[in-house]
Length: 447
Image (cartoon, rainbow, N blue to C red; front, side, top):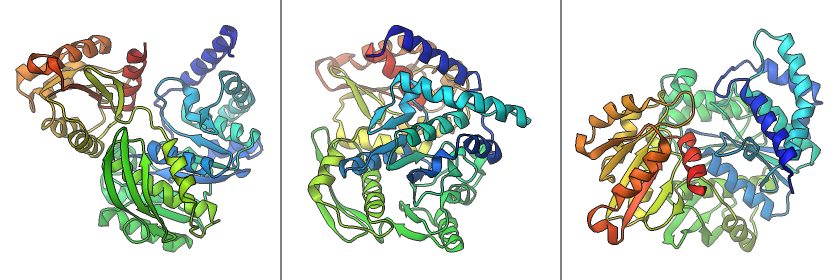
């Protein structure tokens, strides 16, 4: 049981990390390499699955880790960003490390990080220190295999110190163009950088302009290409209470029938089959291996993905979702349309200013009867007034309400959802727009 004093120490560490600039980025790999060198290269002590893509990274990581754990491996998982507490990013055997352990790991990393800061023109970022902290925690455990999500891009991301034996790349679309490039080809080329010599690339179905750089990278480094639609696939998909039942074929050729996955949407079915492919390859040491169907079912049934079409309340139904770009929002809209029979749905959005905000709002238009606009706590959040003006370009003015305070916005959205006949059932609220919005709303609704 964590004491109040231990939690105070933990929150002081969170503040020290935040002081490095929560959203500051730097793609110079020399600093993270130097920090890990001083730590004794902890990332070389475990096997790794490295996950990137424009959407679905966290869900793919969580599904893969759950499957590997079900097969008896001790697992680490590193994902970002977090919804509530920083320690959520660093999990061992499916659970975030304790506040005490987080503090201890930071105590190991912090003095060495200060040395690296002094050696370079710019100090280490929040994400770089978190990456080192995670790898140190995994080495100290120790874990058998770590499933590690890329922060931004791939080739120049701090996590790419790993030479992972399995690289997973979900669908590639336009996002983070400020850093990754203006075209799908540019972005795919950056993400392809996580494919290392002799590795297996597990890739989702890609547009041709994304697939070409991935194939070229595999040829250049002698990696094996394991592509959805050619070597593994979702063969059948049916809705089920609390999720979906899937029949999937892995790259081994084996078919796993009627496997329950407690996540919503076709995009989560794709994430699941990606996780299955990666697990077959890890357990087969690079060669796809047939798995025990009962263990596969156990692993998937235990998987969770908080903040991804997560039902927080009923009557009315309140869903939160972390969609943060147009591609992700379209996937969310398709899942809501398919799996929820709302008679009235109110959307609540708060978004970052560096996204295709109009495209995301347009994606919501077909399913939302009303739109509530607000603002998340992250520093790059788009101001409510600016977001409201953009919403008026898509929705009629009377269909848009604005509340800068997110708690007020949630209360208003619930009341708006229950107007008219929807008060007797079928009312829903969808809170979305960014991971930060989902995290803020999740904390408020949990309270």
